[in-house]
Length: 345
Image 1 (cartoon, rainbow, N blue to C red):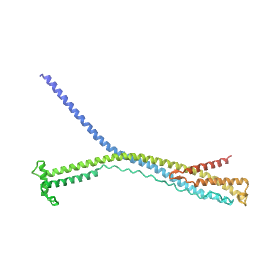
Image 2 (cartoon, helix red, strand yellow):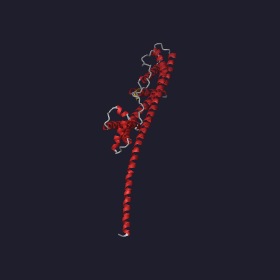
Image 3 (cartoon, rainbow, N blue to C red):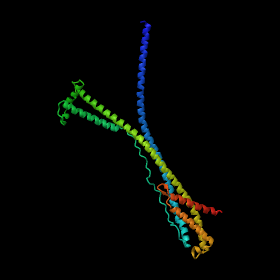
Image 4 (cartoon, helix red, strand yellow):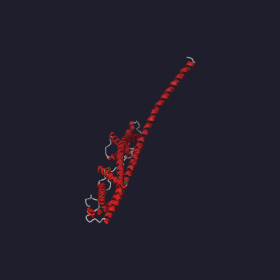
């Protein structure tokens, strides 16, 4: 065989060897990627839970802001309604009574504070545990159990009595350790036996620690998935509640606006009734008034009855608008707008 042939064979062997080395390098890469993916997964679970907690907190803050706004609107509305009832409405009733007009709706109407049923609470999200404390506990218990088991078994194969006194004497422990040392062909020293038991205890503890933390990771993943579904339902419920609260707030503001129109018009009607009483001085009540005055009295009664009906109708059930309140507002608004319209004809 020539020198060149030998060189070619050697080059072929080198290339084949290098190819195998390259293949081995490529085999190791997926393992590193797998470790990275596992690490990323653990991080993503913690981030997901924190994200869920943050989303729930923001949604709850939105709900609280809306709820507080309703309370402010409701409080102002109650104050205004009672003020109108105690002043303008009370005056109208007294003036009409002087004309023997008493077939009126109950004037004392105080709206109850809006109270929510099943008021929402902040969604509780716990931070997932890494399982380190539990893993360490299991590891320690496992290691202790391994040492105890090894001691009991060692005393048995060493023909030592199985009692507390046996394990309280170092000579007996050394005997047991020597027995374990014989298992790895080291008979001269008890250190090898102690080391063997120690390694076994450490190994059991390490395995239990790994199992506990691994199980906790799986539990955290399942918890995050469940929390994500719970968050969707929570947001859905909060959004519906916020919508209802906003609708109710607008409804109360509309009632307040209409009620103030009635207040102004009734004050004008009260002034007219005072004029009638002073100028016409009716002795037989409303029957003694001029025709135009009688029409004004009927108008006052109509306005008063509509206002009192609006006031006496419950505004809400929970945070949902009462259907009767919608109807009452629509009727009251129609009447007062017609009255105002005729003022400028």
